[in-house]
Length: 160
Image (cartoon, rainbow, N blue to C red; front, side):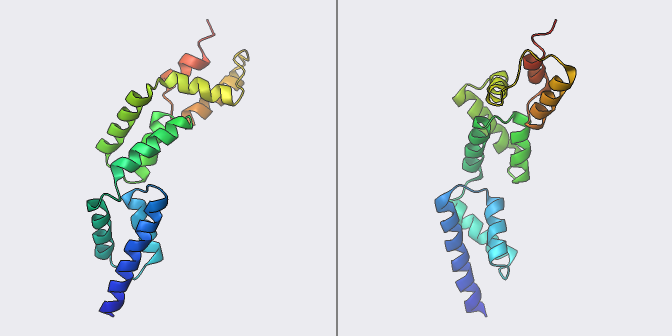
C-alpha cells in the first residue's frame, strides 16, 4: 500500500509538471487538479508536491498573478474584476496588489482609456443620450470591474 502511494505521489508530481509546462497555474488550481486526479493522496502529500514545485520555481502565485493581470487588462477588465478573480484563486492580497500596480506601471494604464477601447470595440454610440442606453452600458462596465467614477467620466462627459 505504501509503495502504491509513493508511485501515485510521483505520478501526481509529473502530472503537475505536465500541466505547468503548458501554462501558469495558481498553487490553489494545481492543488485542485491533483486532488481531482489522485483522490487517494492525502492533503499533506499534495502540499508536499506543491512545496516542491514552488521550491524548484516551477510554480509561483506571483508569476501567475502577474500574467493573469496583464491578460485581463488586455481583455478590457477593470481593477475590481481583476482583484475578485485573483482572490477566487486564493492569491494573497499583497501579491494581487503588487501585480496590479506592476501592470499599471509597465503598461502605463489609464483606466478611462481601457473603458473607451472596450466601448469602441463593441460599437458604443456616443451620441445616443437615452438614459436606458447609458444605464445598460454603465452596468456592463461596472460588471467588468471598472470604477464608477471612471465610467461616469466616459459615459457622461458629453452631457452638460
